[in-house]
Length: 418
Ligand SMILES: NC(=O)c1ccc[n+]([C@@H]2O[C@H](COP(=O)([O-])OP(=O)(O)OC[C@H]3O[C@@H](n4cnc5c(N)ncnc54)[C@H](O)[C@@H]3O)[C@@H](O)[C@H]2O)c1
Ligand SMILES: CC(=O)N[C@@H]1[C@@H](OP(=O)(O)OP(=O)(O)OC[C@H]2O[C@@H](n3ccc(=O)[nH]c3=O)[C@H](O)[C@@H]2O)O[C@H](CO)[C@@H](O)[C@@H]1O
Image 1 (cartoon, rainbow, N blue to C red):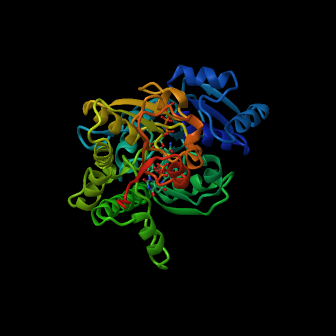
Image 2 (cartoon, rainbow, N blue to C red):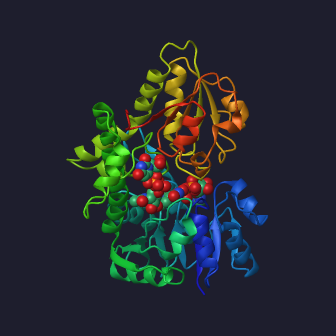
């Protein structure tokens, strides 16, 4: 049984800590946010996702997990703190990783392993992490070991993916890689792919950039299809029957904590990254495109009210980080539209979230921004004659069109001008 201190008890650090605790390790979950620590000390999860509470209950029952505010001595330190995007500099903001490493320094001992799970730009382990940890006077690769083990689990299915996904493990030297692989094999059922820390840093960023660039391509196809008056969804469906084609889905833009951010970590120090930057630009411009669709449908209506269906960055979760809905709402308000919001998952946000009936009352157009399952089978008869005008714009192509048509709605789907 080894002792692991996990710094950062958020969406990634906490389930990771609990998986280690449930699989034979003594784990201390460290967070600088007192509310997080107090909630965990009370045996509750600070946020919800499928299976998390049961995992916490199991770890507490085994006496294998406790939450604390201060770092303490351990065999392994695992860093899972935020790595936000510095939009002014267009580069990764590593201040939390730096402060977490600085918090480890006074407790670092010979033989310790430090794992960075946070998403970081290439060379961070080799350079910045080394520089900070060596303030302890110990030497990396001689006295202590460092690796990058990027997290690739998808929000909404985190636990399953943490256990069953393949894992990339990149040490600053072979011993670091081996020690990290041994540790993760205590709960990971996927394959472990062993490499260097810099390659692991690059792999994580390549994966999310791949997705971003391909979503941008789908968004561009949608706009071209609108120009030609064809249905891009049908076209994508048929194109994807080709054995080597797999086009993603258009939408209102890319949100979340990773895909809209990580490509910038790859470009921050690159000489040529024009494709990646162009893709970011295309995805970031989708809220404007949706607003253009709204303006077209509402032409002639004075002081219109619109109802946004869904502000979570994607379906069936409550996460609103970097959601494209925010930019869309700001732009719509600037245009003079009154905006009301309904989201069955998000309870609190920077804008008020209303009950369904209140949100559609007096509205001239519903704009579906998130692919929540509830919207798929929603029957507009549910809110009867509360709407002022019967318009709906679906940026996810998820509504049951025949139901809305039957109720007399004018329907517009992104990438389907017909
Ligand atoms: N959420 C995801 O889906 C996901 C998936 C893959 C990778 N990642 C990456 O994992 C990292 C963590 O992301 P997250 O979503 O878990 O973040 P989060 O914001 O949910 O949680 C981070 C936690 O770290 C705490 N913290 C900040 N500084 C600290 C310090 N010095 N010591 C201890 N705690 C500290 C914060 O209070 C917070 O509770 C990021 O680099 C992110 O890019 C996230
Ligand atoms: C490579 C990869 O898979 N990485 C995943 C990703 O998780 P995520 O939840 O951020 O990813 P998505 O589900 O792709 O959503 C992002 C946004 O893109 C929109 N979208 C999506 C598909 C599409 O066809 N058309 C779209 O418009 C969607 O609505 C949403 O706004 O990053 C995590 C952290 O690094 C990873 O751990 C995790 O493996």
